[in-house]
Image (cartoon, rainbow, N blue to C red; front, top):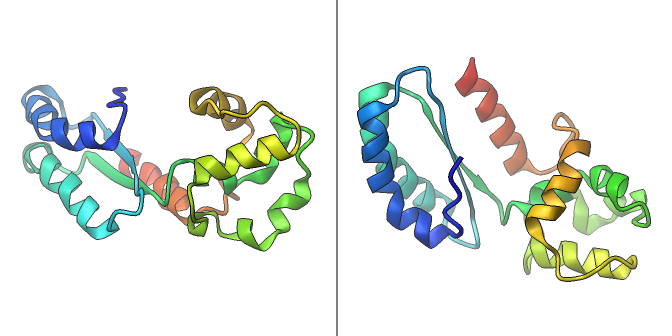
Amino acid sequence: MHNFQNKDRLLKKLPERMNAYAKFVTEDWRIVIVVDQDRDDCLELKKILCDASSVVTQQKGDIVLHRIAVEELESWFLGDISAICAEYEKIPISLCKKAGFRNPDTIKGGTWEQLDRILKKYGYETGLQKIDFAQRVAPYMDVENNQSKSFQVFRDGLRKIID
C-alpha cells in the first residue's frame, strides 16, 4: 500500500509509478486506486486515473481498479452509522434515519467536517484524526448494507477484480 498523502501528489506521481509497475507486476497482481472526489468532476477525474494507468492495463490486462469516494472517503463511514455507533456509543443509532444521512454521498460541506461535528455534539474529542477514526470504526462496518453508493461501487469493483 502506498499513501500519497493528498490527491494532487497522487495525480502528479501516478503516471511515473504506473510506468514502474508495468515493468514488474504480473497478471495476478491487483492495483487499487481510491481518491476523494472533492467536488471534482467524476468523469474527468476517472479519465485522468485511467490515462495514468493505461500503460499497466495495456501490458498486463484488467488488473487496475479506479474508484472515487464521493464526496470524500468519510462518506463511506457515514454510510454505516451503526458502525460509528458501535465505537462511539453516545451517538444514537437513530442518526441514520435523519434525512441528511440517508444518502451520505450527497452530504455537502465536507463529510470529514460532518463527522467531526457529530463527535463534538455527542461529547467526543474534536479535531477528528482520520486514521484513528478509520481504524476504530472499520471493524464494525457491514459492507453489505453500507448506504454510500460510491462505497457499494468500490465493494463491487473489488469483488469483480479479484474473481
